[in-house]
Length: 232
Image (cartoon, rainbow, N blue to C red; front, top):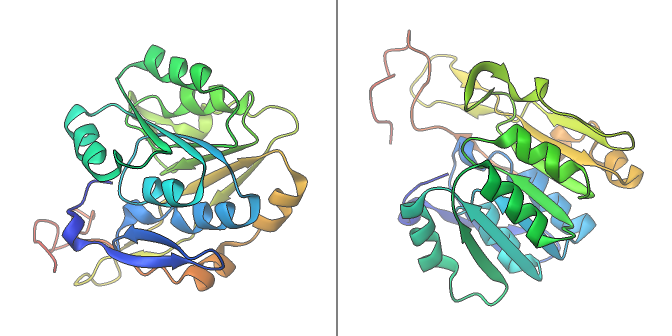
């Protein structure tokens, strides 16, 4: 999620006092799941594919070691300016599937892996599922970026003993539109039965707990009159 820092605002992770910067945008729709995971599972070592204002800020505030793999060089430098002084954060720039899989291998045992990169989301997810106890995918309702028409969820290879929980109903509204909405998915893969039970059927509870008012700048509906109008 790549939004101007001045348009972000602070919220707080309940029970931990962790400051998280986020904007009312669909690109923050995974945050209730991540915030709850940090609170109940308390991961120490986190690897994320794709970094930004939201998840990265949460992880560097709450976790002992965070490595962010970023494919976009310009965005990587912007993130380095934000988090480079944090001793528990390291940036791993580079693009391509071998780079991504190499970063996963070199990181070793991760407590949590977030998949929010640009291209190889399914492959990164499947590799992370081989060892990580917690894997979270963002925008999992969509297509694999390198294969339009092939849905991410159709490429997942979920091992035995790993449960998949899809969060499909976090509401996103488009101000100025009559009835336009979207439902970006977040998917949690977990091995711990206690974590699975905690998150199963938890969408309404998490939305109420963290009170994220997802408001998108533009409507994606081509038939809507606001499609090409900036909404403020």
